[in-house]
Image (tube, rainbow, N blue to C red; front, side, top):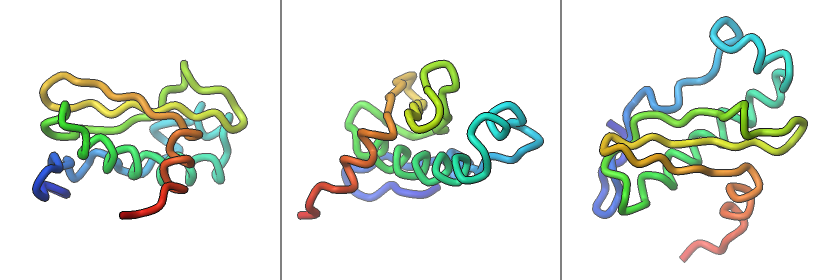
Length: 103
């Protein structure tokens, strides 16, 4: 397991496995290779943020929501936790999070 530091829930090792064309052909055709690479990076970031949320006991997986996302840039992700919590993240929110100063 990844994570598990004090105050951080563990992250399942397969929570953010990279998307492959064979498993997500429609997503690849809509978003393209560059979009998929961004998705994979956002999914890793969302997993880390979900792990920091006290409501999440263990991050099982983080997925892209094709129903809530709007090409070409508005991406929405959800992180599912073992205890049943589902946390949502937008690409805009994740970008803003990156801009925050580190303590």
